[in-house]
Length: 325
Image 1 (cartoon, rainbow, N blue to C red):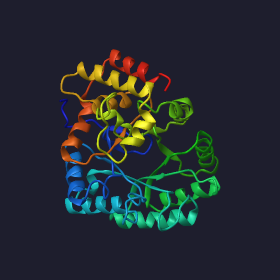
Image 2: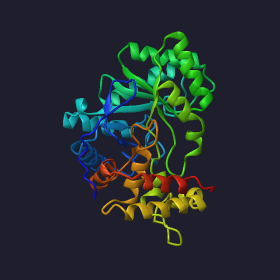
Image 3: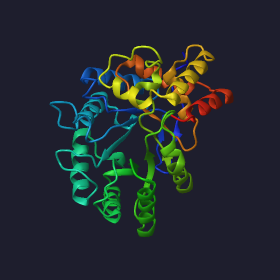
Image 4: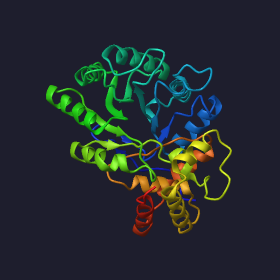
């Protein structure tokens, strides 16, 4: 297996932060990872060189009995118990439906950032994302609200996720025209089996505007981990049926075959590592986001970033993932 101790850091665009080439997804904390497991995953991530952690105010409200904020709360408790605040770059999000409301209006952003700061037990959030675009709120109001947070020292940098090319472009223009803080990081849905939406338009905007990219669902909800194979029973998982419905097509199985072939050329590597290494090699990508539910899984994910794919490897994966579904 490739070495997992990461020494490398990458510039997080114009934010001034230097981050590990893997961003640890916090969506599982308080969901499929309880407190002890979450702490073990976070320990393994930081002890092996990771420092970039992603969460959101809404994680994990979809779990029966949860209210949202569970992930932020666990990360905050972990940072305090380990004295780890200065060792990590924390990203969280606003805009999804929570107990406080939803959207990107000024008042909701103000209420939500205070709640996130309390749960994370920090004085400032390193990277604050607009989780979803809000077509009911003027872009000027949203960007002015974010700018006020930066000026007040409650947020250091801004990012955006799940925005259309049009809304992203408009937001950047509003910031430029009004001398407001601007988005520096984009978090899109992008991986080997989800390329079109990002590559067709969003990537070009990022290249022109100097944004860097931290894609989510980097492993396609587990489809790219080797658990799904054609003509074999799917894994016993609540989401397996949906994953197969979405990706169990000609392109998906071609990608699995290509991952199999590339993995065989790199003894010790696994599907997830190869899929992440391909993603990390794409233009504008600074740190793919992936989650883990054990310390060993965390170390395996980190191994992707010491894996050196060849031009032949990258070409094979490109060809397979460019097929029609």
